[in-house]
Image 1 (cartoon, rainbow, N blue to C red):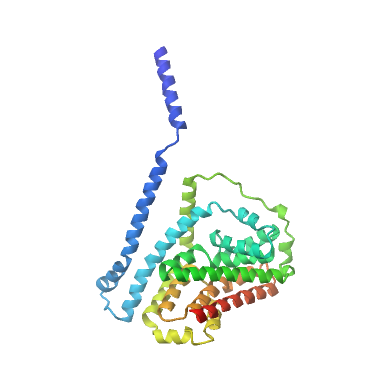
Image 2: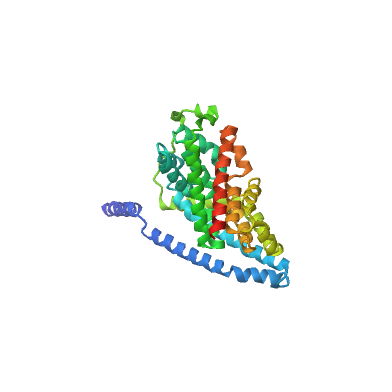
Length: 364
């Protein structure tokens, strides 16, 4: 009987030890799985040019050198390429974003003055999970928390315009130089526009009901200690959410880009958006404002325009106006801003975009 009790005691002790001992193999499994996934991704990614040519010319039987062939090859190459870049980048940045809650972002910006606050806000806009659709709740939260108006605008301009999707897709499709130029220009426009709006002291043009909200009514999210597994799940959830939201814009953008690539003569695009026409930059901004797209949808069009001889400054101005000054965003902002402030916002941002366009057309 004593032996049985002793054995049961030993068995319980072993169970407790197993339960309390951390699984040391889990990090190794995660690392091995990650290496296999990245290697598979890289192999498929490098195979896309050959696959797109096979589908276009062998499977579909399209003749090489035709407009249709060039357009379809562009489409079958760029569609999986953009989607794969999106999955990789959104997953990685999703894990980074698990460290940034809206409350942490708001606290970092609260009480910051002019240029320092504008610069911080612009850089935070790159890594925080917000788009132009989040303008209303963000604006309310920031204003009621005491974040200066100009600093808030720097954040709201940078968040949709200079995000990880835009930079990653630009890097993957047109190279690191254009991606770096775009990041620098976007951040400069965000800092410049926010600083100007802050100096103009336009708080009176915020809707009264926003200013009447008390900061004390806000509640912060509980700061839980997330495990690595939780952050991986967070990253994968970000992939499903963002891909599910933007895939249609990606397909439309690539289809438009394929049409430009295959059918629009290079001489026509160069005459319309080339360096030699002074009105190409303002025309690009005017064309971009009524459009509604995000970075994932507009970058394939940018790739096609650059390939057809459009000037870099003109194309950057077009892309920035589509993302940062879309008409739907103005409608959303009207809920919290009066017409006068929206007009100043559009004017200042448009002026910054025009300067970027003319500068790069002159220098490059």
